[in-house]
Figure 1 (tube, rainbow, N blue to C red):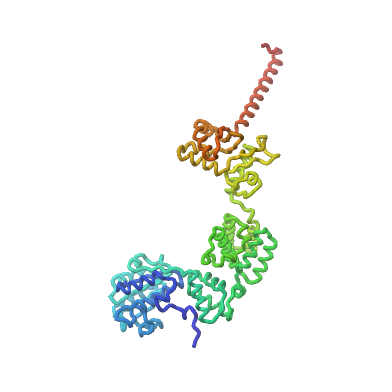
Figure 2: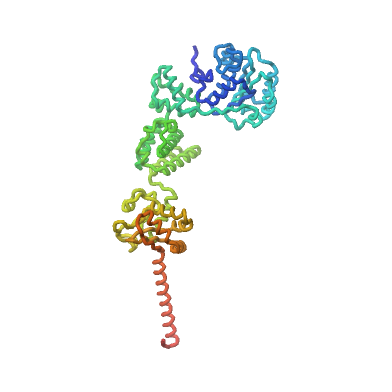
Length: 544
């Protein structure tokens, strides 16, 4: 007996065996049961998910001889069912839309529908890849599918529903076939291994299911290839060595080198990786998928069907080393690399350049973080107090404050730097925590929106004794708060639990005073110089 590929051997022969298309199965079975059989169906969806198989099963259900009428499930043993399965039924005509695209082919169908079926209830036309028909062919088909003889049923299948004219779609019952889930494909592969008495690692079957991207036919085809070189035992190591992909273990090892900033070791690892047979395109694909999964894990998503691997298989060192925005930057670099490989003078050079950047990924910061830090430095120069930004982590300044770092957290400058405004704080004194400031402002905004909005512009909140000094950069905001201090004092007492006297200060007051004194001194010097010049010119003297 000749060998039969798994995809053909495991082709669904009944609605119950049609995996992953529960909605389609339920709808078709109910329509057959109720006798609501349409004259035209349009099955759309990705490749290898069961569109043509469903069309054949529907044809068998309509013509099954087990009952007097159409059957919800074809028996598979009667003359009609066997003939349709073998493809030699005279009343079920399968047409390849890619090979029969002309209007003449459609005219032949129009002539044939005038003849009733020979030994079946319905004459069924299954047109695969119907989107390949020409515009004239579609136009010639319109009238036929709108008002066919009562014994004619059309079933169209396509992978590109957008290319089917709306005039055709509106005359058909449309069914959208979905990609088959990763778990379903793996379960079917596991069942197949049991039937064939093959030992298979769960990781190996999961990899095959992932590579199939929702297509059961692709999964069976890849499975046949894997079995041909794996023998009686299917392992992920054999697949990796024979098919040439990096694998999770090697991705973990390489990205740990990136996390440690070891550029030289990364280059040597890449050389060994490419020597093992991994292609540049496959490496970039595997690396992109790896960082994508790390990003999922950073966001707390551990579902195996999404990751394609068990969550515990990923390196914790890599997960902890990078921040989400750094992982997003890595993905952007890899996507750009994949686009550049097509026109690259040397693909290895392109990959090594990106690898060097990935090894320095821990030092990457976003432009927004740079802008925030520049703003913080400006405030430090104005106030004499260091400003702790959200992205600086648990730095010394944050430790000194005893608070979690946040954009609004302000900490005393370390001794030896800044201006003379620094001083030691007694217990219960110092900067107001950022969350307390936020609570005060939010409570005020509920009653007085303008007051709360101006209070948000404060550069620093600082407690000294029984006084709370609030510093402002803008004079307008400071004057606005001075004019309505009572609500501020009430909310400060409510949130901080102590009564404090509010003193509104302007950060630039001292600077302005110094500038005024300097200006006055310059004016005095200029006046003195003019007087001395006049005395010399007129040989006079100053009289009171």
